[in-house]
Amino acid sequence: MTAFEANFDGLVGPTHNYAGLSFGNVASTGNQNAVANPRLAALQGLAKMKALHDAGFKQGVLAPHERPSVASLRQLGFGGSDAQVIARAAKEAPAILAASSSASTMWTANAATVSPGADTADGRIHFTPANLNNKFHRAIEHPTTGRILQAMFRDEGCFAHHPALPAQMHFGDEGAANHTRFCAAYDSPGVEFFVYGQSAFDSRPPKPSRFPARQTLEASQAIARLHGLREEAVVFAQQDPETIDKGVFHNDVISVGNANVLFHHEKSFLNQAEVLAEIARKLSAVGAQLVAIEVPEREVSVEQAVKSYLFNSQLLSKADGKQIIVVPEESRHIEPVWAYLNRLTGSGGPIDEVRVFDLKQSMQNGGGPACLRLRVAMSARELAAVNQGVMMSEELFATLNAWVNKHYRDRLDAADLADPHLLDECRTALDQLTQILQLGSVYPFQLA
Image (cartoon, rainbow, N blue to C red; front, side, top):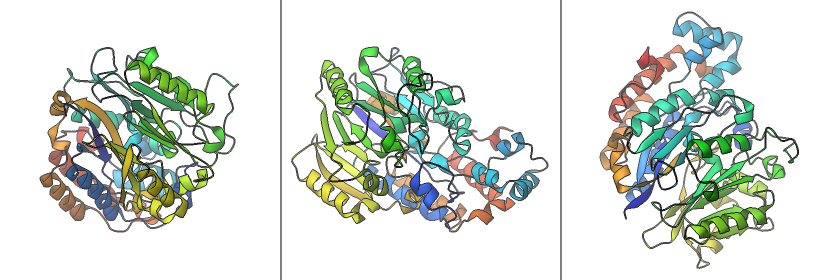
């Protein structure tokens, strides 16, 4: 192959915990205050990366962030030494300390929106880090995310990096979790599909009433402009507000696409028939035929889809032209979902294989296989220009497993976030990680 879709999975950070910070994410709030196992979480994620690498897919690693974010706490008025900042926050505002300690950067589907060079005006791969403006614990991510992405994708001849959109609700951007690309081949022009929850400047379209609509139309349109995308190769669609209110906080909880295939629920989008017709028409213009696989509500309900994360899966193209679907273990334990997957893979359609991974530590915080990865379509030349220190290999897998076992705790609860030693442990681990992944200085404590 001369072109690939590489997946860069988020490495779970040392402060992985269940603080229940993400209103609208049913799993996150439902497991609030449970005891987490950061070591197991990181090892589960690494096992998935290695398995997909071994299966022949291009797989990379995206580093976690420094947590707790002392800089954020200082910005909010907590002063003194780093240990004093944490102690004061723990005493006066434990919820803010928890938010500043979140390991949510593990879900790299929210790290950025990525457009490949085949679609962009200048022929380079474009990255825009998501501002994640809807949640404080995620809104503090994008400066470091931008530095890490630039350290991974350094070659200015191949890669273009934009700053995050303005940190304001009108331009709320949740990254690749609301973005899919359809194409005939990864290095040929495609159709980029942006899904939003609401229009910030237009009050007429319906909005969810229970949970927030995190992505705005205006943010999606801005990214399409920044990336130099052609109007005839972009589709914008609104999520079904009723589906958001059932816990579908991002589009990747209710649909997933790869190449010319869209695997989606009956209740994914407003005006769904029109949306599918527009994708099909624009995809046909670039030489591909859309294959839309729609799961009926009568077979798998929205609630079952959210609980199982059936659609928060990965679709990966195999050498024989068929696709594999990667799902979490939870999908096996919900009978209608598992029955549907067996019918799907035996139907003779494009998806003919299912792989199941145990990602329970991530799932309990509301993130499945799709949440854990950022997709980058690229040519062989562009892949060679990536910082090779982040690409999965036998050696890197062994090194990262040893690194996790050395630095990560196997138990973490809310009370542990007040331990000043946790910050020291995190910084020591990340300082070593930047050397392992050849990132240079990307964290605030390294830049001070």
